[in-house]
Length: 193
Image 1: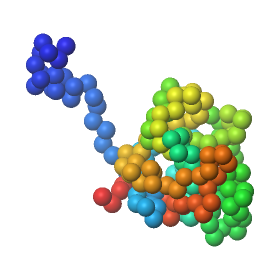
Image 2 (image 1 turned 180 degrees about the vertical axis):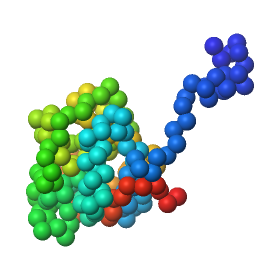
Image 3 (image 1 turned 30 degrees about the horizontal axis):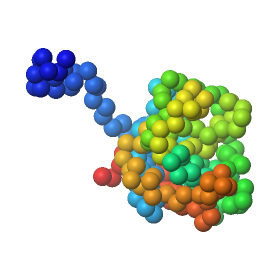
Image 4 (image 1 turned 90 degrees about the horizontal axis):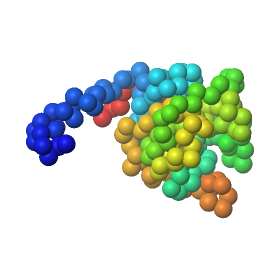
C-alpha cells in the first residue's frame, strides 16, 4: 500500500490512524529508585478499580520504601507488598515479602484483551482471580501466556532502562531477591523530565 501512494502520503495516513496520546499527570505513576525514574501511564479505561487502588496507595505514600521482592530475568519485576515488603515499616520481613498486601479489601479482576508485552504493568494475585490488592509487576519481555489471566493497569512510558537494571533474583528460588532494590518514592503526577 505504501509503495503506491508515496512516502509522504503514507506518513500522513499513519499520523491520522494513530491517535496522539498526551501524558495525563492524573494517570501517571512516577516511581523513583536509586537507579533512576520509571514513569507508568495508568489505564483506568481498562481497570478503573485497580488504577484507583494504585493511586490511593501512592497518595498515602504506602509504596515508599517497598522492595522488588520477586524479579525474574526475562520475565518480570514484582513489588508492592506494603505490609511485609516496606523497609522501615512495622511489619517489614524480607522472608515474607510477597505474602502481604494493604489493609484495603482485595479487588475483583478486571481482565481485558490488552496483551502483556515488554513494559506492561499488571496486578499480582494469588490463584484466586479476585485477590489482587497492592502488588504489581512490570514485564521485562512479552508474556502472552498471561493475557486475559491478570489485570493490566498500565504501561511504562519512560524508564524501561531503569526497570532493566533492577536487581534480579535467583531463578531457582522463583525470583527471590537477596538485598533487593526498592521504590524510594511512588507518586501520581507528571515526570520531572
